[in-house]
Amino acid sequence: IRISNCTFLYFWPVRSSLAPKASKAGTVFTTGLIGMENPGLNPGSPVSDLSDVIKISAGHEHVLALKSDGTIWAWGKNSDGRLGDGTKTNRTKPVQVKDLFNVVDIAAGMNHSIALRSDGTVWTWGKNSFGQLGDGTANDRAVPGIIKNFPGADKVFAGQYGSFAVKAGALWAWGRNSYGQLGDGATADRSSPVEIKGINDVTKIAGGMYHTVALKSDGSAWAW
Image (cartoon, rainbow, N blue to C red; front, side, top):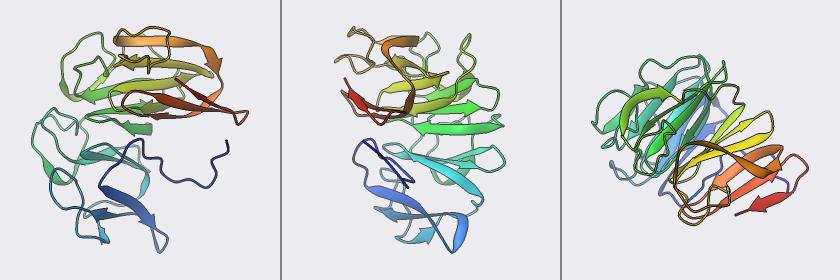
C-alpha cells in the first residue's frame, strides 16, 4: 500500500477538519461544527494568532499544531488536561503547551496527546485511564511529562486510547489493549512502553478504537 502526497491521516471520524492554504503557508484553516465538542471555527476561517505551522494532528475534540520554532499549540476540549496548558479549561483559541520546546513530531489521541522532542524523548499528557501516557500510572496529567527510560524515539503516533513510537525501526506501544490493538500478543492494558515483536521498519501507524494498521518501508500493510 502506498500513501503519497498525504498531509493528514485521520484515525477515526471527526466532525471538524483542518488544512493549510497554499496562498498562506503555515496558516491553519478549519471547517466543521462550532463549539467545544468539535473545535472548529466558522467554515474557512483561519485559526487566529497562529502561524508558521508545519504539522497538525486532530484528536476527537482537540487539536495540536506544531510550529516551525518547535513549540506546540492546542485548542478544543480540555476537561482531562489534553491541551497541556496546566489547566482543565476548554479553549476556543490556541494556547501554548506548557514548558515543551524543540518538538519535532506530535500525535493527538482521543483525549491524550504525544510529542517527540529533537533529543528523542517522548512526552505525553491528558487522559490516562488506560495507561496511554506511558508513565506507569493511570493518573491524568494537565502538563507534559517525559516517559522515563525511553530515549531514542524517531516517530510518534496515537490511536484512540493507545500510543505508539518507532525507535530505530522497532515499534513500541502502550495504552488500551482489550482486543490486542497494541500488537504485543496479549489483551492486557500497558501503562509503560512494550516492544512489539514480529514487525519492524514501520513508517506510519493508524490506530482505531480496537485495531491498528501499520505501513512498513517496503510498502506492505500490517494489521492487528
